[in-house]
Amino acid sequence: MRYQSRKGNWKKAVDSARDLVVAAGGDGTVAKVFTQIQGRDVPVAVLPIGTANNIARSLGLIGDARELVAGWDLDHPDPFDIGVARRVGGSKRRSFVETCGGGLFVSVIERGPQEVEQGGALVGGEIDRALTLFRGIVEEASPVHWDVEVDGMDLSGDYLAVEAMNIRLTGPGIPLAPDSDPGDGFLDIALVTAEDRSGLLEYIDRRLAHEEHAPPEVQVVRGSRAVIRADKAGIRIDDDLEKEGRSFELLVRPGSVRYVGGAKQN
Image (cartoon, rainbow, N blue to C red; front, top):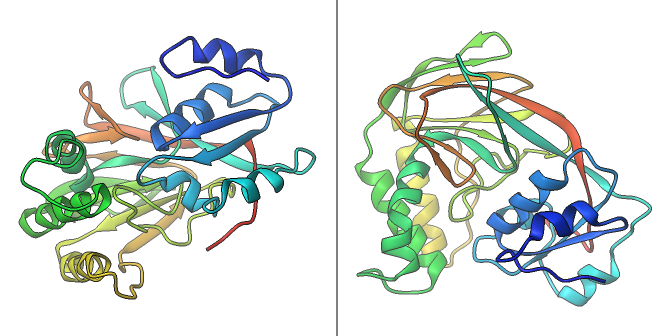
């Protein structure tokens, strides 16, 4: 057994693994490990010790760590797709594990480090602070025009957010694509309009009040290829803000990662 912090040469440790890689951390750590190991026949296990844990929660891997470890079955791993983003007009390809898109959640990434991670004027736990920040962003946001194409179907329009989801959750645990399956070979493109604002705000308010809540209802279109473009909105690839382009072709590498899980929950 070998342990390697992300502060060290973790990529070499992942590349040299032969039997199993355990990604212990939050979504950033898990996404980096999944991206590094894609295409190899070495399974990955996830021990979620982050804040949102969107990847682990989408896979149902939340609970007692001992139970999760006891449930690791190296002989029967499950497939996990990796998304691919290519800037239109360019050749460079970027992998993503969670989502690629823009709008509301770009604002969360831009403002989160100052207003959520460092506390600032927002009080409460980190997830509640993130939800409070997100609520304000949803309330104030104006829709912008997006060119969107999914498997040849034109879905262009004015949106608060467009997100090509590989998993169910994004941001502070928002189930934007509640039926997404990261092993089905497709992306779920969520299209959030101004008409969805009230439902999204109600969902956030119920979560902040610790009341029973259902996923917010937004249009989700499933496809294996998408092209998105927004001249007046930022683009993010997972949690990285894209600075070189506004137009991207999005594809899927089916089953590029194999993961082992424990007692799965909804």
